[in-house]
Image (cartoon, rainbow, N blue to C red; front, side):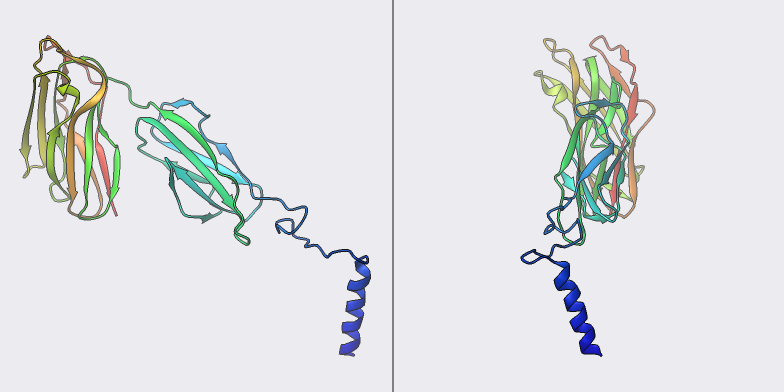
Length: 266
């Protein structure tokens, strides 16, 4: 009886195919199928190409052409791992300037991948004249050192600056604080640092003393700060409340924003 069943099944398969006709897989996701559908990915929510956005927090969304696909994304060319059904990412504390987001999809059963799609955009979330850390956020491991730049952002006629930075001395150690290039365009400038390691703060006073080039415009680096991570956790380097910009006549320039730095320790 078992042998007759096998013969009967074989006959059905033989008659189902015309002589010389090749058996084709029914799965449209199988690359051997002439009706094969390659993996695809499209953005559903991203800034438009070349646009400027006025926020430092953005959510990017995408989708594929089939259920059960895996995806990966790249923010500023740094690729994530492949993740099942992950179709969005929210990124906080995005720095000023040009950025890019890219995405790619794949069939997990075959490993076939889609083309990479990408969008370039600009972030202008900080209105000058402002004082801010760059980058806004560092991600590092315990014991590592990171470097922040303290920027004067979108200034006009800036001749001097004074500001206080607070930090937790049990979490981070300030390795060095050095002058940036913004006030060194002329022949003379001053840069003074008063560091209180017990309290966890440092005060910076810097100014241009060049009569031929008494001030600067635009965005530039006032100071560079090297920080060593002492403990795990999130740490903030924040500005005090008495920050000042001054013009060549020693008249105070109002500061729109003072944005500190963040260290996420792994």
